[in-house]
Image (cartoon, rainbow, N blue to C red):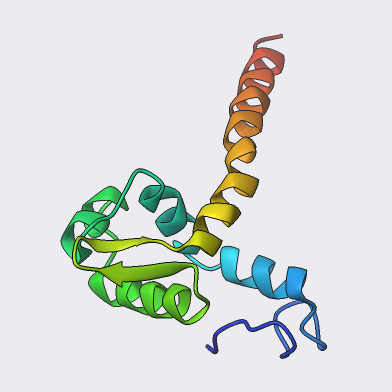
Length: 113
């Protein structure tokens, strides 16, 4: 599978519209989870593997390479961390966490009815 780059064909878009490239990336197994887990600070490979519920080393390595290529994370002495672009993306997706909790609560309340 190739890295979803804006301007190149990605899932859902032959022309590679930037939003479709982003959604292709975030829809990949653990891509969003890695970004979410790095919000709390840098992590070594093993620490990130633990934060990500023991993701396989192969999959983690693949996603880290993709996220680094797309300039969403960087590797520093302290470990992997979000880049400034990665932080900007996290700030945009963070409200989805609040919304999803409210949504889950509403579904549970409706299920009880």
